[in-house]
Length: 306
Image 1 (cartoon, rainbow, N blue to C red):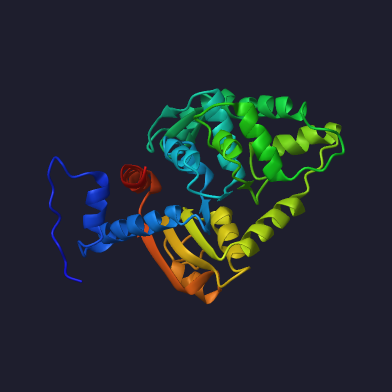
Image 2: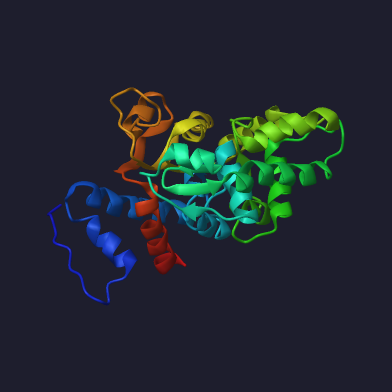
C-alpha cells in the first residue's frame, strides 16, 4: 500500500480523517487510523462477544463521558475494570473534581486535604466520605447472608446512582455485566469489607467467574478494546483464551513500554504466544494517552455508524 498524504478541508469529518490516517504510512497516526477501522468492525459485529477494559484513572477525567457514550450505545457486552473506576464514578456523580497541575506542590495539597491524580485535584471529602455514604445506602438494599455476585452489586449501584453521567448507570440500564477482579483494591471495596461485617455481606466472586466463563464459551468470536493496562487488561485477555483460540479482534491503547516485561506494556503479539489472542486475529497497538485519542475514535464511529 502506498503512503498517501492527508487532504484536509473544512468539510472533512473526524471519521473521514481517521480513515485517511490509516493510509498515511506514518508512525502512530497510521496505527490510530487502523484502530478506527478495526473498532468499526468490532462494534458492529453483534455476533462477537465485544469486551472493553479500562483503568480507574481515566474515569477521574472527562473521558468518562466517552466511556458512557460507548456503553449507552451498547457497543460492548462485557466490561472489565478496577475498583478505582467504581470509586471515581461514585465520587464524580455525587461531587466534583477540579482541573489541577502535574507540577503542584503535593505537600501543600496534603495540608489542604486535596488528593492529586495526575493533573486532577480531588477534595478529600469528595472521595472517601462520598463513597462511604453511597455504600451505606447500598447496604440498606442488601439482604443479610444472601450471596451476591459483584457484577450484580455493580448493577444495583448503577441503578442507585441514577445519573446518565455514570458509566455504572448505563451498564445497569443496558444490562452489561461489570467485572471487577480487584474488588477490594479501593475505597468502595474497603467500605464493603468494613460495613459488610455487621451486615453479614457475602460476595461470591465465583458467580462472576461463572458468568464470564459462560459468555466466553457461548460466542464464536471475541473482540477486545483494551484501554490502559493492569488487572482489568489481564482479566480480559486471560478469559479470552477459553472457548476458542483467543481474541479475534484487539485494539490496545496504552503509553506503557514492553521492555520491562510488564503485562501493561505487553503488545498484542505477546498475547498470541499465550493463546489469549488468536494467531489469525487482527490487532493494533496505539501508543498514546487514551484521553488524547479515544474521543476521536469514538466521535468518528458516532459520525459513521450512529
